[in-house]
Image (cartoon, rainbow over all chains, first blue to last red; front, side, top):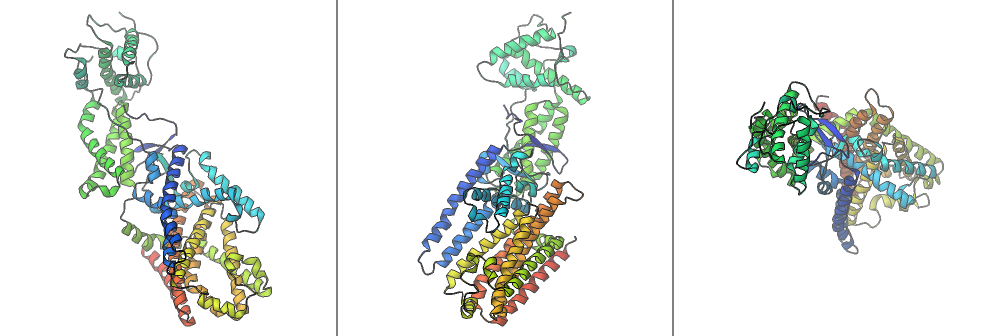
Length: 301
Length: 335
């Protein structure tokens, strides 16, 4: 069964340049935080190389070059790790890849280099500085005025909380760059329940002729169709019992007459699905979408 | 109304189109497990075609099919393919050429009022620092803190100060490279910080610019009073032209962002912020490259060349080169 499109998170509609609206699910803040932690760890591990270079240069006469190389590597790693990956891997750093999220352009266009750069440049301000402010204020502010320091601390703490305060979960960097971080789900396509071939394979050689009138099919709506599809795809041990229950409910509601045939619940529902879908799709094409079932029951005449 | 076999239009439609969706899925999976480079030329040209075909399938499916499974599948497949097709995928070299050849100079030109404002603020700070320190030399310590002074100050003898301009103490070749790269990363970070702080309505940027100007002015006054004014500027300016320009650009970027927060103009605050944010980002990115250039000049050139005339020659050359670059490169493209 395909991945259910959960609504925890909220979806954002993006209009592609072709004029089609795609909806993406916003990434949960937890996923983003986990991705950040993973990326941070990777950067930290990566920093060991230049750190080793710099340490090995101590006391060596030609050591300056090693220190230079080390400093350059630290600088590049710290500032361009995110930019490099988000540009070359379609908006995914290793951390984001692990948690299944990615960066996209909020307006549906191409993800540009400066957007990726901008969204990452502000991370220093949002993340590292508030941390420093809390831990060691004197490291951050060279300013002499205590008031300025206090004010900037307040502002910086506010930035850290910004994703919690807006619907699009944008960080300051996302706001400036016009990007969104969304989930990257995969859906698999199961066999088509509407196709008759699927039925005959599993139901045995003799397929009873199960028919429904238009009046009977009118009793149910799109929501019930989807529930039926989910039910028919289930493979757990309770499914037989549920099939029997639902089949009986349907039989009573639409006053269906087996006309002397021996029809199992699964055969019954398996035949109902394509009939109901054809009926509802036909109505939909003509402009009528019936979302829900009708109340009451049909009378057997 | 129906026989034992019902032919649904949506089933026919899916049967007809499914093979191409599977092809797209395979391509997308290939890209996602590696990168766009994982595709060969043939696959790369098929990707947009398959994407467009699948997007149109999605439109059709939304209109005629009630198979929720199918709709979710197409929706997510189109989403994944969309980020592949519209993700950044240019070759790095082309992107660099376009960036430095066109977009960076253009961004500077568009932001010229902010650049002018930033330069003015820096100049004001420098002038203030200069005049105040000339009047009262001890003020130097108020403007410049320990770390930046590195032992220089009004208490030093003139000889010591002159020496500092020409030999940098006992630093040797490789140490200078280390020093240069340290400066680069330090200044680039300050530049980026300047930009990022612009979000706070630009106030910290103004403060930073002014205070850096004060430092510059104080130093200038210190050396001026000892009669080393010309030497001082010959020491600062060769790399200083590039570096100060980069600082001004970063600050201008911060001011742009700050202004768009406070005065959104006709568009919504958010839309304006995004637009300005990207323009500003272009400037900062270019400025970081300029810091790089400045660090090379500072680290390598300055220690090798001691002749004042040569130093001033470089000052003139770098000022001219940057002006020409910005003016010419941004004029070529249609605005």
